[in-house]
Image 1 (spheres, one colour):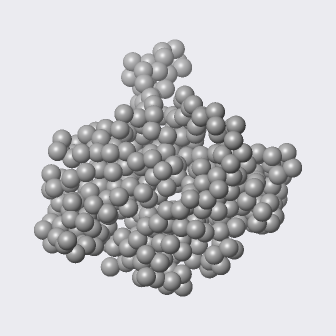
Image 2 (cartoon, rainbow, N blue to C red):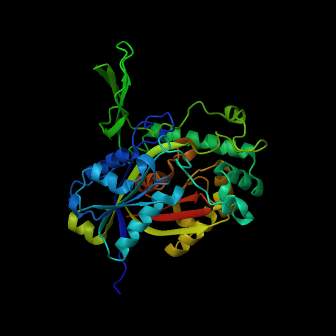
Image 3 (cartoon, rainbow, N blue to C red):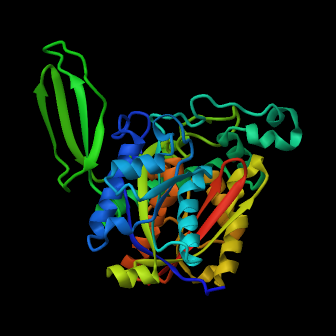
Length: 422
């Protein structure tokens, strides 16, 4: 058997994250958004012949409606990639994007491929969190050991808060810090390497003429100009604006404002809308390649994908999943926690984030240094790819050696991936 190859990240890019259901991408189809991000990824690597790309592995947590029908293949075709580029959609809920990257890396390691696009896309505006026509197995509700599967994610966060004794005050303080870090990062331009500015086109009725709208919003790669322009034609007002920042961070967030919010999931609970991740829309993509591809196409690697691990935990405490996945990913990599210079811990809820941080004794200074999903948003199946772009560019910008991305996963799982700057 031939020796395993290394898998490298040659480019990593993402869209800004929009708020759902009424944010900047609320009328943008997730396949269009994915196609736009793929085109942006190719623009970063002009030396690569698109015909060399062998597959597109794309994560999506609720693959139905406008993000159904194998959104990976649809997005690849819409992006203008050659018909020879295949596509497969992956669903591991919140870890779908990271799993897509790991699957691409695995194929490259064993020599089955040399160039693969891996990423994720999700519109929580256009597709509800539980899908359009969800059908649960009756056993989920009839058997005690499966009860946790039927819990809403918010109730699992309440379970974690109670078992790990995470107070409401600590959750709110964590949420405030997420916003503060995200705002500081935006002001410092820390996301500029990873975010693709995107032009959003919306069409609304011209009230003066009384005509109805002709269509929904679209998205396309745009210039870095953040201005907006509008024109009217045939009773329809067309508005174009280029977006280049995540929509979620709020400058008006304070401990006092967070403390006034009522529990969102349990009458006497501590989990609120303010200390939970935001429902969001977004997409991200990475170019995963072999060393042979680097040489053949003249690509410059950003990072090496080192290891990936996924572990199951009881569904009713799904948020604690990273505490099982992180040690295994480190073991597979032959690394220790103190060698990590950057950790992206997806903030599904402040309660589970704090429980994981305390259980693993993580250094909070390096956990989500640019803020997390509470401020930036969590477009489910896209988040793994989006936050992978953050890790890859963050390691290079701060000249750190290793970074980790980890998250909890619905129905009781945890996933973790490790990257090395090269």
